Image (cartoon, rainbow, N blue to C red; front, top):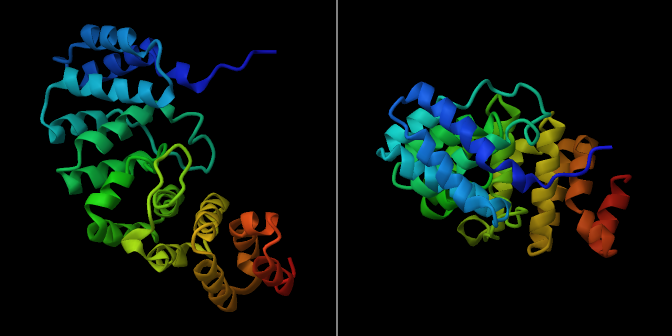
Length: 261
């Protein structure tokens, strides 16, 4: 039986060699040897998120190009879209440093960065990288997210829910948009009946996050949605109320009993 290897060790010199090779095919001037050496020297004692940040920083240093040009090169490494709901967190981890690159270096180029995150999330995820943009470009992001919420790609629709979660794991907590839980809930409205289980799970997780701070608003909204959609959303709302159910919250239990769950 093979022993478990922590994910952080994926982000090491071997991955740097992969990046160096791929980028050199696109941009022959890329100093691949100094890039690989820089990553090797810096990641050894670091944890996962810090390793991702190091690779992103070393990419920025080695490319030495304006952001728009650099991300244009990195986008050519993305590979084919994932057409399934599996493998996003098994085959796409190498894209984490590229998403981090957009997160850190792309804030002054909103449209270019949104295009990059849109493409990345169809292959891995942009749920962490998108969060600074929510803080810096809230209105522009709301417009973008409403378009993405009806995108044909399930991974893009999931990003609308997952990227705006107040308590997204591995990420710094953020408040609800505009300080109003109904702003978040309005983004979830077109997703509550999504046919993708992948999206349904994210919506449930988002509702669960909201229920911990905005219980009344969340339950009120769920009741409204249930009147519109009935038992088709039972699994999603039960998943969204799971923390309240776990502590025997009477309002959540009464609702679930009423809808037959």
